[in-house]
Image 1 (tube, rainbow, N blue to C red):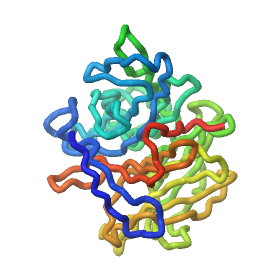
Image 2 (cartoon, rainbow, N blue to C red):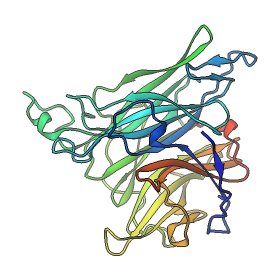
Image 3 (cartoon, helix red, strand yellow):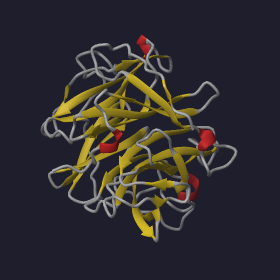
Image 4 (spheres, rainbow, N blue to C red):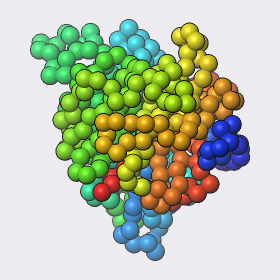
Length: 365
């Protein structure tokens, strides 16, 4: 795929995000799914710190790579809306880049809807945290299930039979077979790691800081926080930490969504956030992307931003995943946006100092 550098100066001229790159992936680039695949989104990009032998190149089955390749997990629609699955059927795929994100190759599905599970309809909104090993990651995702099939069971599962079953978890592991570098599913949690969520919940973004996995997620129209010392066992909070309209600049008057935390530069921690303003719903008059900061994970204040605004003719940035590079020296946001031909495609914005080859992990001191 040829990457086109559009070199757009985003309308919020006082801010640092000045380029748009892509598309990185389109629905036509996928190697899996069916003819119903019309859209992809929710990209989460991370780097594989691969130091085994910096002089050797390793085949991925679709090409070769040198150390420190980039990986992207994403969601893909693989089935239309139905009575059983009102939001359609969605799965999670994996893509690979061996040239610091200039081009991407799809490696296929990681997780697809499976009958009898809490993700029987939807596994979407994937977010990634590196485990202690440089070759293992935990991926959190939004899950939805077939309510009728759940209610037909002899006994109700521990997570209940609501459509929005909670947050799921899977593992990803890298391995080497000869000179072949492989990425395989490590396992899927048998039950959600966070339950008792409400309608329109999603974007379970997690970072590991000070010995705890810290999750911020959206539950329309606000953002909520919970944490755990392990990769599971999160408890649903009773009240939000960021409420619609909290930004002093006024963005996100109707709802906040798609939180994404970076922690490489330390406290205060930066939580990049999308905001929407409807007047009235469902007429969208602005979608913006800004930032909040926190030092204690309980109180938040608006930082620099908003960086982009559709009201100022910037692209509509959906499902944004923020990353830092070189210990916080640069930043980027990977997102999906509507394509002219229909569906969504994956793009990114970045600061001039962002270096994709040094993306920081979401595991911090």
